Length: 367
Image 1: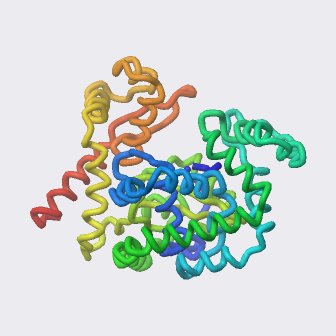
Image 2: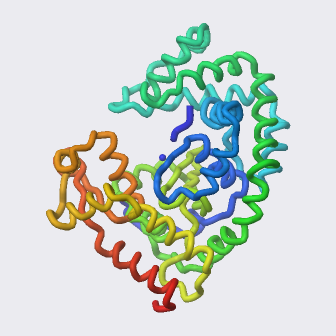
Image 3: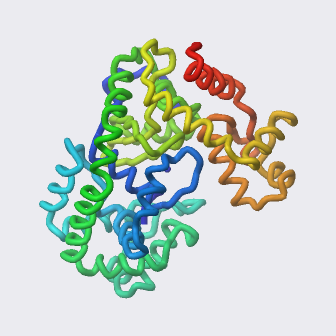
């Protein structure tokens, strides 16, 4: 099952936070987007084209590998290329890949409120039947986030590590050769431009939170990201060509990887057209929907609104409104804060003005 998602007293040295290309994990995240089949605005069209090109059997296999066996296959080390990562995967003992998967599940619990401490894991009992395995996953991820068909098939592979390894390696080689390799060649120059632009930027004197906001271009919530960074000795920010305005985090042994939509630093004099286009597409996609525009208009007219108020005003279901609010917050058009335990949303005037300026500068050459 895939996871799929600062208040500091002093500034840190820039070396603790970096921006890097990370070809292996970068490509892996792009493949994950296709497995999740998110229809969120701003996700690059390559993700849809990739998924649409697959047969039903290929789609199921892709979900099985990327979601059902996620923690066995996800890159945990830095590799110089995606093929190098596949070779590394091929060189691992089958039992080690299974152990990675089970070890990850021991420390995961996404349901709220989290039990403290987590109950000890009895793998003999959990792996005694597919039903027990599915119930264990539901207890860690929540019932709505467990695909029973995918996880039941994953259970068979957990019981057969050699077959699991063969599936993981063969699928990754197939995904690279048939889909990702050509796309990586297309986007690599743009991603390298993004990395170089941030490596040139002066981030000395910034706290981790300030650097994270500067790199991602998002107003990250302070308390939450303080906790994220407290668990990390090093944070690597990775520009991705397909993730749009959304962020994806991966933790591994004190290393925090944060994937963000490829962009360039604000205020830089050098303009990189490919990055400008990518950021404009991500921003405008969030506006290309009548319901999202209606929500923005309501908040603009009424001022800060709590989530229940938006649900009542729109007549939409709670899950639908939550999804729209996540999309608009990710794009930066809404700012989120908690008021007496409920989330409240206000219009981000600065983001709207900067979006209009970015569009004007792109077409008319004005800054």
